Length: 296
Length: 296
Image (cartoon, rainbow over all chains, first blue to last red):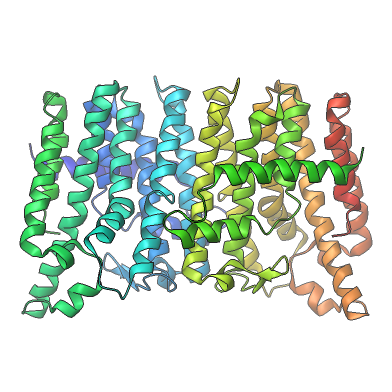
């Protein structure tokens, strides 16, 4: 299957749904709603919402009925980027080639836009009850999944560990803890939420959950590899160990070759989790291959 | 009824539940969990959780079954204080006589502690499904209420309006919009969430909702009045109009006497909303009287 075309189609569905579900940019207070849309519209691959929709379909559900939750996951991802870019955190002026939210607006607006997107995400999940065949029990399970993955056991805790570890040579244990919480948790939750909304049985749910965990960890390791390879390409020489060692990345503690090997093993394991499924798992299989092979 | 004793008893219940439901301070990453607890333990009247519990009882429910949602409302209130105190917002070094979260820890930790408390709040609401007799349908309604009250139609939108209006003489319309969103929305939501969990019928729900709206707006107007009276007591002379006019407060646009009169009228209206209830509404009646008469 053409995974690029599939991802583009999913992204278009999600972007149309976001436009429908977000407060219009001109409503009061306009600056806040504009900042939310500015960051959401910056794009990206929309991988998390695609995982929600494809996991829902894989479990036998109609992916359209999971669109509000797919949008919620993208809102949470976007909020985390806005807050991570703030001066008191990573202090990044650019995000996806455009001024980051606090540079385009100001720090207060960026802080509030992040808070608003996180809050809206749970409103979108609650609103998923209005979709055909979705039960309140499913929505409560999804709410719990999202809160755990975005909270201190997941994303927020991972960002705190990352900040606390800055400037020290990272250990393998710390890098794994950061990656599992900061990135893997939300990608895994995207798959689990889709599985719940698609009506997965216990065995299907566990298989999809394992897929999400291994895909999510591989995604971050590949990200680490691309960062280094990209830096090397830009510099025209291998990145010095002083740069590599200061950051909590997989290659910094395991080297590039071992990182590539492990990412490949994780993707193979993710593919094996899908063995019990048929053609309905094709998009998830293609996404796993894409995560390993992507170049950006 | 002795409202001070009642509020103290409710606060003790909520604080015990928070201690049970929050990640322990020593778990990884400790600094984040300590910051969350530091700000939550700073105290305050615990008015929002008390309203959840008393509205639940008023609607005929067992207030113990609403404790996770009561804690969620306190987490949201606390997160909003942490973020409002940050340098890019109100830049306050003190909160309730102690260093604010970013002074006690640092800005990044305070930002993440706020994010974590907001996220945890929705996890607590989802966890309310485990309580006796609570249905998934009730939990989804509560989730939607909290997301709306805390989001851009409510708290976050109100804070944005407040920041945008700074330095300009406020209009009556702007002050009302800020108060309704920044403070009233969450107090009203507390009452509505309690009513939902208590199993309120439509008429009861509307009556309690009106009570929450009028109580919430009165609360903020009294807060504005106490700020001015407190400043005058500290200065030993009336506060100059230059100070009063720069802030979006009720007395700044309506004067002190009219503000007192309107707060009294709102509380009387809130009391009238409870006319259809019997003894089960006594705590809510006492809380309304407390909101008008409080001196701090």
